[in-house]
Structures are given as structure tokens and as C-alpha cells.
Length: 229
Image (tube, rainbow, N blue to C red; front, side, top):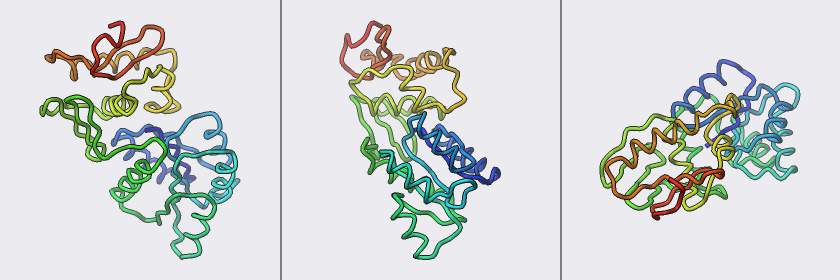
């Protein structure tokens, strides 16, 4: 899942981004409201974490403009203000949830999971395909009951493929959801990670789950003959 984090305090932004990346989220950081609107216009995000007190344009204004532009992804507002009127103002501006600072990082993760489950692209607590099972809360993966050891980025790629089961996803789509703005579109990093996943996921099993469509991308399906290789 790709997240836009809008936070002007660099220390706080660094702390949140580091924690999210360790839990398989791709994170872009915008330090002010105008930059946030620009990022949201040129990139596709699954969720926005939006501070209220921002330079240039505050979080309420950013939230209203995002919604007015048709932005549909969940928005979680962060703020040091915890009065009822502040929470109401945030929700009325278009936010889906509200979390007051300081907060426990475990609660932030839980709220993000809840928002993603409620979003248009439903992210179930447990995703299953054939004999493969993903727990989207704990990021544990098993195949035929056997646990698989994946890095955070390998897990993020696998989750994206599983949630798009039966659909061909191109490298551009994968980059938009699994990597952040630092991704080099001319690199072969996606192919490298797919190869690593195949080695861990399909080796030793008669039925392959990850298939390649040459010139198109990848498709996750237990159906044989779904790809070129």
C-alpha cells in the first residue's frame, strides 16, 4: 500500500515513515499543504495521513480540496488538538478518521488497517488464494500450512498481487502501489523482487502461483497456463 504522509515536522515525519516502511508500506512525505496537493495530483495513493497544522495550506483546506477534486482514498488526520470541535472540523472537511498526537504507533497501524478495509479496494484481514494465506495485520504468509519468510518489500509486492488475483498488473501499477517516489522506472528492481518471490513461493510446489505475461506484466492465479512462463 502506498501512503502519502503530510507532516511538516521532519523528526515526526521521519519517525512515522520509518515505522510504516518497516510494516511494508511505501511512503511519500509532503512537508506542506501545497506539496501534498501536487503529490496527490501526480501519484496514486491508497491512503493519506494528514497533519492539520501545516505551512502554506492547512490540513482542513488540503482535505477539502482533495475531496473536491474527486480524491477517494481514505484520509487520516493527525493533530495535537483533541477538542470535540477540532475532531468535528476534521471529519466535516472530508477526513475518514482522526488521531490526536501524541499517539501509540500500534494504534496508528490499527487505524490504517481499518481504513483500508473500509476503502473501495477492500483489504481483508486474511487474504487467501489456493493454498496460500496472507494475514494482512501481522504480515505472516503460509503456503500449504508452511510459513514463508519474506522481507517487508517482498510481502508488500505479494499482497498487491494477491489482492489483484486473476488480473494482469503492469510494472507501472506495481511501482505506484508498492514503491515510493524514489523508485527508478528504468531499473529492473520489480523483476528482481518477483524472481525472489517465485523462489520462496513456488519452489517445491507442483502448482505455480505467479505468472508472467510478456509485454504486459504479472498475474497471480493458481490456474495453469495463465502466463508465458
